[in-house]
Length: 107
Image 1 (cartoon, one colour):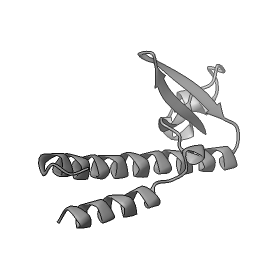
Image 2 (cartoon, rainbow, N blue to C red):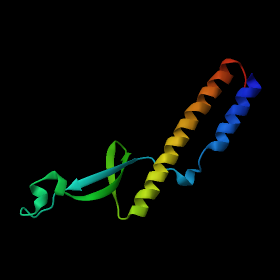
Image 3 (tube, rainbow, N blue to C red):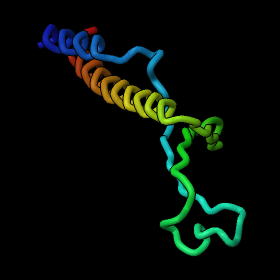
Image 4 (tube, rainbow, N blue to C red):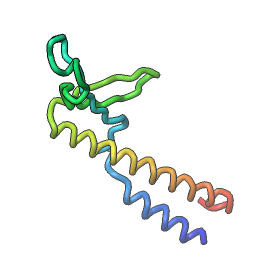
C-alpha cells in the first residue's frame, strides 16, 4: 500500500505545471461609463464602454489591479491562473498522500 501511495504521489508531482507558467490572481472584466454626461453609456448599462480586462492580485492584504492591454495578455493571464489552480489542486492531493504515509510511518 505504501508503494502505491508513493507511486501515485510521484505521478501527481510529474503532472504539476512549471512555476514559470503560474499566476495567482483573478481575471476581472469591467464595463464602464465615461466622463461625457451626454454619452449613451449614462442612459443604459448595455451601452457601457468595454470590456476592460484586469488582473487582480492580493498582496500584503491589499488588492492590486493590472490593466491588460490586449486580448493576448488576457489569454496569457487566464492560462497562468488555470495553471495556478491546477498546481494548487495537485499540491492538496500530494499533501493528503503525505499525511497518509506519515500515519502509516512511511516517507
